[in-house]
Image (cartoon, rainbow, N blue to C red; front, side):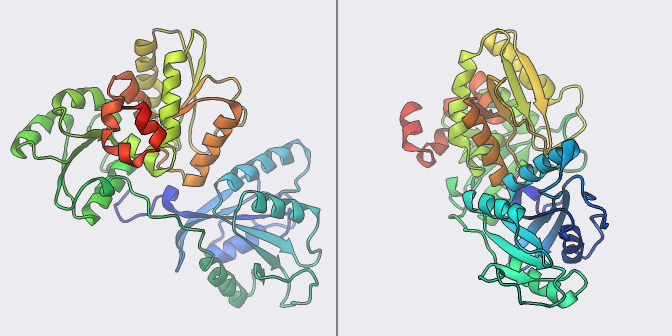
Length: 406
């Protein structure tokens, strides 16, 4: 992945929802300008959500999602509706597609209620309307008429969506707010069998890009070159950021007076769940024989012999806890809805997931009473360097956590 490509986790997610055969897929294809979704008169043609990354100015990079009908029936229909609800959990802007011939019915009311409960900005699109604007219930600022066969109406729909900017919080940072311009930061990036050929993993890309934009001086090295880099910079370094896999090795090399953290810890902060991850790490000390730990990743990749999620982290858990634990894994868009059987969830940094989806997963864990942490925090905890790894972040963390970690 090149540095100028926007990852899905950084895109605004726009979901199309509605009844079967309301015309969601036709609108989806018209908006994207491609036949991404199968269109048919037969109900239930869309069986799984369809995703398309695109640019929608002035909104910016977006991820458009076509969903199965929310009124789908039968066992297969129930599975499709579950998929639709998963999409709803990550949706930043919702589009409620209504068949203009039948108008608002119970299904649309249910969806509208869900949008309001979850505080998701939404637009009601009366589809296949042939230009009519006489529907009595089609009033309000968040209503528009469209027809997939009418380019002008699709252009108007895209213009309307592009103005629906979700409420923007203050700018989020990975690391740029921690370092003054022209300060030196060393990035420790292992290049081993698990490293993707020809590119850096996403958190490394994002941190590097952010620091470059902020005017911070950066040096990228492998762990085997770290000592040389520190010496050449005369130890005049503001921060060392490392891949979690070599956390322990790097901590032994970097002098205590130089701040140290990891890409994964910075990503937890960026995605808004660092405080939850710190609480969750405490649960590692409370694990017992037979406890089940879920290790979850937001992306899907070919696992190699020293894969961090399925090999290294379970090994470090066994070494640290001295307990006979059971490990289960999930990856990509799949995440268990029933978490009651788990004693702990260890999630990746979530770079491929948007903040809404990470918060949804965190909330599911919270509702089930299951501690939730992430790779970097858990590894730092088990390597005995957690307090050091968040030292530079203490002023940015909730005051209660600052007190607890003094």
